[in-house]
Amino acid sequence: MPTIASLKKGQKGIIKTFSLDLVPLKLLEMGCLPGNEVTLVQLAPFHDPLYLNINGSHLAIRKEIAAQIEIELIP
Image 1 (cartoon, one colour):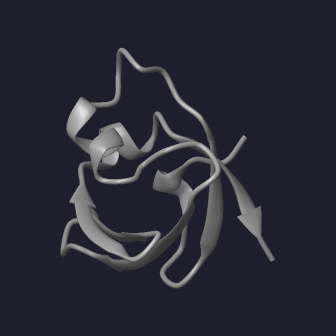
Image 2 (cartoon, one colour):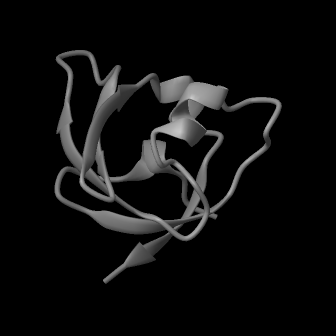
C-alpha cells in the first residue's frame, strides 16, 4: 500500500491507516487523521522533510514518519 512518503509533488491521497505508536500526537491534532485528504506540496532539498497540505493545513513532516502513514491515491 502506498504511503505519504511515496507521493510525488502535486499528488493527492486519502489517509487510510497508521500506527498510533509511530505517529506523533501533534500530527493527529493538526488533522492527520484517517479519511482526510493529503497533498504533497514540496520536497526539501534532500527529500526530507516533506511539505504537505492536509485539509487546508500546511505542515512539514519527516520522511520516516510519512512512511508509516498509508494512503489511497486519488487519480
